[in-house]
Amino acid sequence: MRRLLVTLVAVTVACSPTTDPTTTPPPSSGTCTQPPASEVDAPSALDIRVEPALTTPLGEALLVVASEGLPERALAGVDAGWQCWDGAQWVTTHIVYRGFGSNPGQTIPVNQEFQIRVPSIGLDLDQGYPIVIPPVDPGTYRIEDEIIVDDGTVPGFVIVEVVAA
Image 1 (cartoon, rainbow, N blue to C red):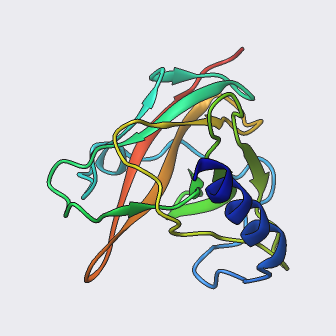
Image 2: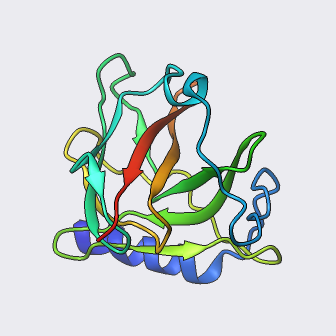
């Protein structure tokens, strides 16, 4: 079953040329700034965490979305948005694809002309999946994710602190 799921993910990612209209084009280099405390301390509708709490550029981490408070049939997708604060709003600069087993996944910069999103595919919550931190400068970032539930989606986020390697 896991092999079928991984194959389905690979085929979906390779063959789905969908553009996500809600993704803001990435800011030009150097325009990400420290978000205000109100953004860092804002509540999330999902319980998401990154382990370890302090990450390094190109380091591996575990992205965990807790199922507590969600319907039993809630689904996670293989991707999430890596965001930085541009001085006015969070903008998605990379798409973080969850890995499986010993595969850490991959992180791809947002391309303004073509970007593939796989919002839901039926991954288990709670156990967490490996991710790769993008090659970004040290600072405060955010991973935005959404969980598919019977009657729609539940969006959420986690603040990520990137430190020098």
